[in-house]
Amino acid sequence: MEQKKSKAWVSNVSQQTLEQFKRAFVKKCIEAGSTELQLKYDDLSTMSGLSKGAVFKAVEVLSEQGFIERRPATSRRIANTYILKGPIDFEIPKKTEIVSFGSGSDLIEVVANIRSKIHRLERENERLQAMLNQTEDGLIEVIAETELPGDLKQLIYKVNKEQPQEKAVE
Image (cartoon, rainbow, N blue to C red):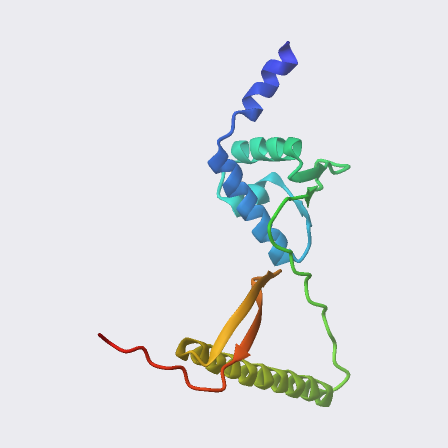
């Protein structure tokens, strides 16, 4: 009975507190490029803007719900590891690899390649913007539209060879 009573105060946490902690935790995972974070309660409190007591309750409840997994450290001086289990509705990008360059010319070559890719993407973006304008003018008709992961859309369209007839104004 005593153990149930002591656990009751832990589960007494608002949905708003849980959501605030979830958002902060997922944001930190994205920044770190990992679903595993090794943090102390002070760090969790600072990143979420919640008190340490609220963080403790949120971690307990979210662990029970399966949103995160807490792996206790072997020592009190070492931070616990928290693993994001989800569900979340987006993929956490991986942290980019650290690259070292043998010489300045290697760096210049990489930068030139990146600039070339950016220029190519800008041209493609302009082409797609022009197509969108043609869609609004009736020259292109979207036949099917499919949602893809990562806020992307796949469009199937047909190009009208003739100018659309303007509607007569009555």
